[in-house]
Image (tube, rainbow, N blue to C red; front, top):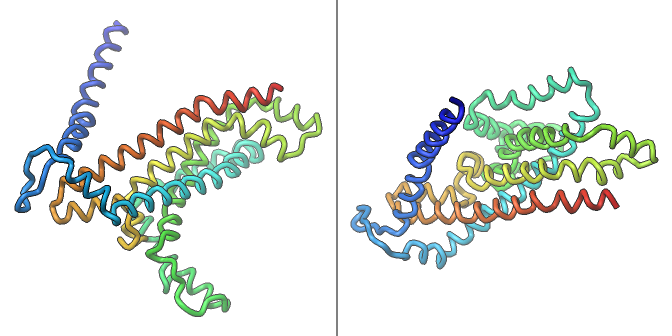
Length: 286
């Protein structure tokens, strides 16, 4: 009975993926080769949309801005998540640990859009941070944070740091505690214990946390729109601009470009995921 159910589940899953993922993806790629004539979408096969993207300065700048924003935000989220995960896993009592994990998940009970708009109350020139700095005499003019890359990054980090820390925490929770106790008995410092034991064995979770943070940051539209005010051009903002004027072929080409770049980075990170832990573990044994 179970093999039959397994076959049915596999076929249903393949059908689901074909209808809701593969078919829209094929249609998206096809539209990227179509043209726009008299504001009407016209089936064709031309690479003019990709030529426009590759030769347009605004598109290339948006690509590099998106990559820079996603890479740095993912690196920061992972860097903040490592010590948080280490503290929760090794230095906090088990009962308190569950409370902190619940606190990390608590913000996700509210809307992501509402949270981005709430950051405007903190980051704009008349907001909470600016008012507090003016009260203590550290700020005289405008704060200058809103509608910048910094504001976008703050909004993304508020979402990504809890996720990254939980992913890394799950990886760290599999570490054998006797290895850490043995390292301390042998006189290893906290930094040596972290670098030689905790970090190598947590590396798969760290890479996954970085990859997950990168994917969200690279394709996010809400934070650049709300906190960037559409003044920081990313690929997602340009796709929205093309859709507003019904330029679906260029929007589809930009989406294919975004998918291709993110897929290439995912492949590279997965290669690192499979090979780096082996290298680090071999160093431990020497």
